[in-house]
Amino acid sequence: MAQRDLILLGPPGAGKGTHAEYLKEHMSYTHLSTGNLLRAAVARASDLGKQAQGYMEAGELVPDDLVIDLVGERMEQLGCGEHFLLDGFPRTTGQAEALSEMLEELSREQPLVINLAVSDAEVVRRLSGRRMCPGCATIYNVHRDGLDIGDKCPECGGELYQRSDDQPEAIHNRLEVYKQDSAPLIEYYQKRGQLVTVDAEQGQQQVSAELADLARRER
Ligand code: AMP
Image (cartoon, rainbow, N blue to C red):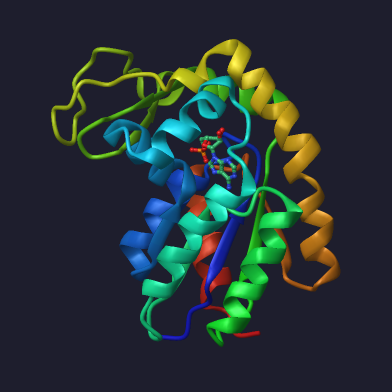
């Protein structure tokens, strides 16, 4: 089945991670989440993790060169029949330019960019209610699932926690950073004819189904 490489764009809490998990499971994508890769680096206390930690806790962006190198390494490992799904990258036009060059060097097509549109109020509601499982990486929400910090994950029994950057002050900062640094990517990709916008406030299953449909569509 034909499928396209994808970039999921959108503010924090738009559902990038949740829909990426769905597409990975149903369409065999290689999911590249810079947030997950960076959190793993912080947990390992690697050099990258030590450099990234302060920025992440404050809800600031990690410097472009660190993130571009991280994604570049992963891109080089992709097989030619393997499709990627980028979640949380690019977040600046510098990262977008670097990605485009990387893909040209690897003779890969430029990806389809899906903009997940959600209002600020919904972002705040979702992020403040988000709970993570450390075991299987399932994402829950107190508003939707009723599960809270310290509860056991229904999938694997892991103890649910709240990301440190989902605290109110960091949420506010991440939204500001998104508007300043990442929202310009919408126009950037629109001009290049790569962008499609999806209403991400619809039900989760409907959004996932729309994304799967877009991913299968020929150019
Ligand atoms: P996320 O899980 O995508 O919300 O990312 C969590 C945090 O990791 C962000 O708030 C940033 O501090 C950092 N991060 C993730 N992706 C990037 C990126 N592409 N550029 C810079 N910082 C990033």
